[in-house]
Image 1 (cartoon, rainbow, N blue to C red):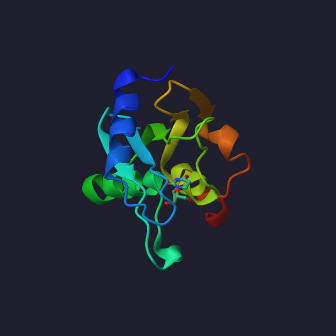
Image 2 (cartoon, helix red, strand yellow; image 1 turned 120 degrees about the horizontal axis):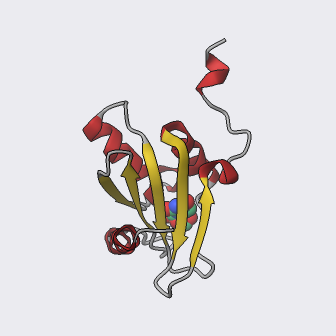
Length: 134
Ligand code: THU
């Protein structure tokens, strides 16, 4: 189940989107295990590779404010798409880096559609730190 306040935060975050090239507004909110929230929006660049997705902006804000112990309990991503967009592969990888064990990812739009997954469903067999610890 998605908390109504998180849905609202993600939808509100869309309004800050800087997306003159795609014209696609994306908003995201992450809730940490202690209940703290951070929002993000997509920020595009005329050199397209400089574009960053809403999910990663939210996570980078959290890490830069809280430090490396960030543990993400919930991610909510809002778009105008129907069905709502899923996170891109790079964002799935970045979410995986900071996800708590049962991290949920909810995808929403303004018309009330919701698609819900665990982060493991969206990134099965993900690459993680265990590969670097042998
Ligand atoms: N985008 C996101 O913000 N999150 C995603 O997971 C998928 C894509 C943004 C990047 C770009 O600004 C626009 O959507 C079109 O790709």
